[in-house]
Image 1 (cartoon, rainbow, N blue to C red):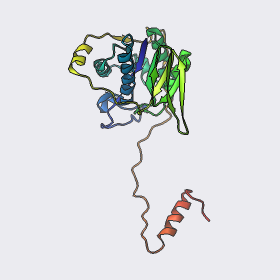
Image 2: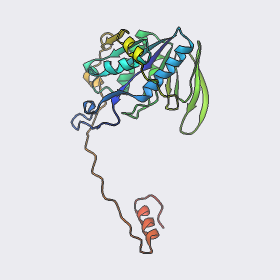
Image 3: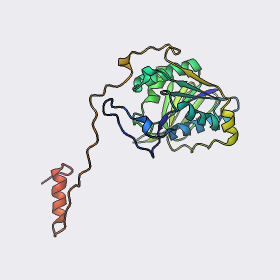
Image 4: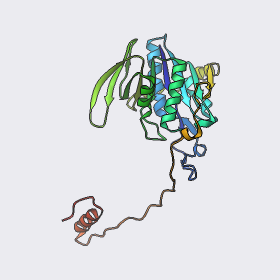
Length: 261
């Protein structure tokens, strides 16, 4: 069995995140780049399955610009993945979800897979649609937002969590799944893993190698405008002189938070 784990590099949540007001893109160089935690949990799912089924191959796949990504992917290799594939191309600068899904689908087809595991949503964007888009493009079943995962030779199953319900679901392999933070924390790389990672295969592909050639107009979402977040105002202060309740009710009604009389 071959499992592809989608890995994403994001700015460290403890660093400063700002938007380039000219391009509308996140300034990724202003914070330390790290692997998104949810993708590390996805890797942990794959590694635990490989421990139970030693014939399993775990492949890391990431789409991103040149820079620190090879270093962060090495962490995934040090954690125990067998090899990594990094898709990079200048035409992917500012790529939206549609193009990113198309690139990942092309790479997954070239690598070959039985299962693709992704996080349900990244910390630098709240789209959450990429795993489902990927399943559609690959023509395979997709299970989203799993809080538990069971994998065997023929199927993948788990508990699906939505905003309104929870239910058990399964799909025949090949398939694409996304997992939530309910899955266990990722393991830490040990010294043996760090040293072994230096010798593991690490392939770099561009769009030409994947048979893709999008134009500049296909590479990004259209950003109409971007503006700095306005400064926070002091708000409305209510002094209780015996009629605080009435003042609060009037404030809520004025802002259409409750119906006025």
